[in-house]
Image 1 (cartoon, rainbow, N blue to C red):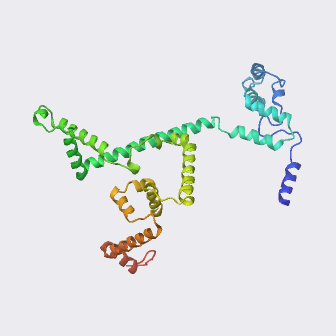
Image 2: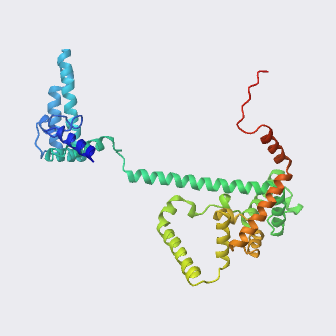
Image 3: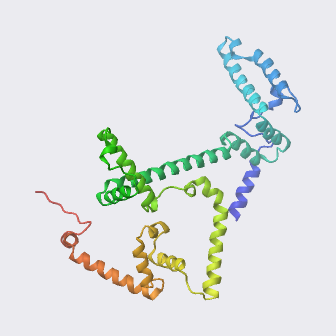
Length: 333
């Protein structure tokens, strides 16, 4: 506490008596007096006064080196005064300093903020930044989705299924009469379009490779954030009321939610699981803690057994046993 009082006392002791902010504005000079103006001068008055004085004191009017150097310093101060008084916000801060010279450190902060603060509206910067992020999200989502479509169209397992479905729906022309007159490239292009159409409509692509929606864009997320926050709060309050207080039985959605939390999976990761796998979780009643613990212990045991039987894992264990990580050898051979 005494250090703070000492620092505050020193600040008061070394505060300039005239209240001028050195290195800011016009220094020890009065900007209005430099341009021979009064406090109520208009912008036109400021412009005329600066031109009149500058025409008489411009450095180019002097040939003597000493006089020219003095004129350059004088002209620099006049230019500073003109720049301050013609800018409405800078002039407002300067007038505040003249009216409140005792608030030295507040005036220093205002002058410093005016000098270093960006001249672009922060709201515009935020809007442009959010828009750029939204565009990147949009194009990245579509590129991921296109990557998934191309993958399914190339892998034989999925490609053959897509070809069969395209034939059943009549999207893929197999009649040689109808194909007559078409080049191999045209036939190939028609086949690829049909396969892609089937994959887009039939394949259940989830997770990061899913087809992007409007909810994946940052602008939309920010706009709907209050609504989604209230929805999240309402969901948890409903959970507490329905299942903790009223002791109702869990529905299928609630069971899946508990299982997902026990497994530590995100919503996207859990949705990527096959339906028969998730149905198996329900059959084993994994939403109950004791059943899940037993199931997890069994899976861990199976995983350890697989690792013990794995040749690669055995080689890795021999490496750790014989060499070990972090060992250093000094071999001069």
